[in-house]
Length: 204
Length: 335
Image 1 (cartoon, rainbow over the protein chains, first blue to last red):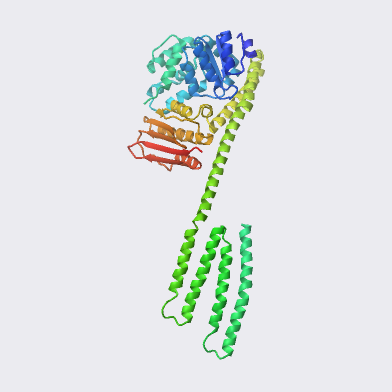
Image 2: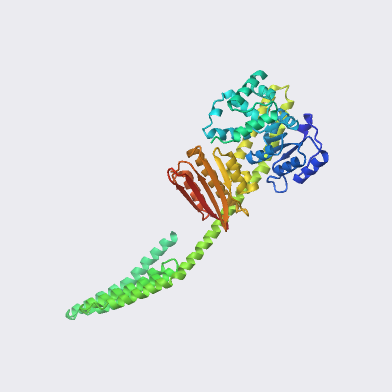
């Protein structure tokens, strides 16, 4: 909490469990809800259930779920639960303060933040089928860019991460979309969804 | 082991103690026979008279060494029968042979022995009771082990992992504040990276025990998760009314996981269908693919699965005809 406050994010309320989260969201109507997958009392997947319910009640609410493990079922449910503003990050990412705060702000603004483990698992699975000539056609740099797109990063953030110019990133992005036969879009979130849909569709 | 050695030692002492007087008696009789003119060799009858009780005594001693009470009784019966049959043959030889009449008592003895063997079935029943008991205690032990592993996983999550996460968060904040002292900031960053690596290792460890989604949502959801992740196109069917015990769930999960890995590895491009159903107290798992078939059921992965399933008194079968896809079928009792 202190970490969020230090970085210019106002914390309006805290809750101890799933029902508490729903009450708080109903009461305060925040821009963003952050929760753990495992919450009391049973410490299984209440966090996901609560987040999905909160988004059903308030479709405009952005949700960031923190977890200690990567679970494609949960990320899939979150991505399917609304048009924008979702995140699923491993908890230890909080320690990379600047990137984390950036992710929080991006999700709150309607963007996407998917943990790099989720993305690399998707790409690895896709790659393993071996039949993927399209993915194989990407250069190493384009692949890196693809991973960052799938994580939900903006072009500016990708340029900073890869230490290249914004123009170079834009070129990579348009190459990727051309090679994967994806419709190019301006909207960041739609761009993420297109890439994720591509990654999850099987090669057969 | 020591018990056995002890028994053998006792046995040989007893043997010597019993044989010595018999031998002395026999030798004295032969001596008397020789001294009285060595006519008709009558001592043989006296010797037979000694041999029969001695033989019976020995066979009873031997029978006593059997472990089970029922097999002890049976061994005694068999031993005595053998001695009596031999005695019959001896008498027939000593009385000048002729018509082989000992065949009748021998048949009678054999009949009685067969009857005894038939009556011995109750002994079999006690074995069955024992097998049941062992089955129950074994599955209890396996269940206990599985739930202990899940507890360890939970403890790792709530304990060590949570602390490491808190630690890395604090280190991250410290790193932010040390922007003006890059050397110290670099040290802190390395510490943070170590903490992150430890978290990742704990996570892999926990996943190896059982994937969280299996504990959270049960077998069907975990199988769907596997299907989502798989590079093959996988259809999941079936439903479960209630959750099987953890150990059964985990075994079934790994059957599906391994089978789908095999599909991706050996049948690229094939589609697979996973069916998970309950048939009474049985959990039935089936993974069918339309790949090239010809899988080796003795492969290490499948053998490991088979052992895992059989340890739960389940059954695992692999049907893989070249050109006709592969079926992995497992049935697991859910007591």
